[in-house]
Amino acid sequence: MNNIFKILSVFAICVGIAACSSSSSTEPEVLRDYATQYATDLASIDTYIDTHYLTFDSEYNVTFDTLLPSSGHSSIRTDSAFQLKDTTVTEDGINYKIYFIKFREGTKDRPTQVDSVHVSYKGIKLLKSTTFDQAVTPTWFRLQEVITGWSHILPNFHTGTYTPGTGGNPTTFDNYGAGVMFLPSGLAYYNFSAGTIPTYSPIIFSFKLHELRYRDQDGDGVLSKDERKLDPTISPLIRWKENPADNLYKKDNTGAVVTDVPFLDTDGDGYANMYDIDDDGDHVMTRIEIKNPSGGLYLYNMIPDCSGTATNPNRVRKHIDPACH
Ligand SMILES: [Ca+2]
Ligand SMILES: [Ca+2]
Ligand SMILES: [Ca+2]
Image (cartoon, rainbow, N blue to C red; front, side, top):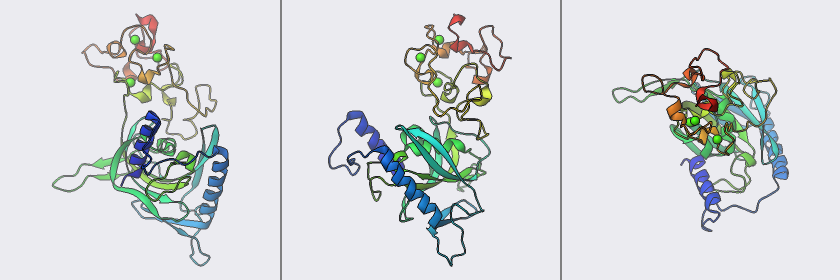
């Protein structure tokens, strides 16, 4: 059962049509105050990581258990076999702390919050250390369609390499990003329950990021990751949540830390570039503007400026320069 998928799909539908079947197992409870619930969840998570330990094998399959004085293990917080990190994200007016562990960062591509990822994972109920959901075989899903916590943590990891299976042997994955995240309920299912997950449950996921697909939501030929920059003049190295250096990806082009990256809407028509087929509002579709001389589309890094050159890394690319037409 891939609950992470199904529950959120139901959730999205419920929100979209504002009426849900009363027989649905995901019928929400009365909404609690976010700040109060977060304080409760964070206390539970802090207690858990001080009173439990984890072990992992060479494939980063993770097991959690209660820490006993005689067990010879260290708590999740103090274990030197890995480092417990945390990051702060803002949702619903709350600055949520998310603890996570990066067993391995991965070596290849890094997703943004709007891309598709191919992951295997295991979801664990915080208070009982029992598994409620898992996908041993990697599964595809879109980060915009699953619980919020995933879209904040997965962009900290990279994919790895893989060898396609031949002669009936399965594809093998290597060097992929692998980790664990501890999510307060406000970044998970909050007032929804499903299966064995009660409402208002903080939960844990271990995961492996095997592969990703960069998406082009508006089909204009520019990948969404390249349409979400803070500013068209920003260094291409500091695109949104793409920089390999953890401490850089949340900074804008002045070096200031940004907590929430706004959508870039070049022509100010209310449609963000990643959803706008004419980014600069010059009535020429982006897809037409980025055609190369052989009739194909320029890769983002090759799109020239109005003068037809692509040498200046900080150039304003022609499809977001209305003066080009
Ligand atoms: Ca696009
Ligand atoms: Ca627009
Ligand atoms: Ca245009």
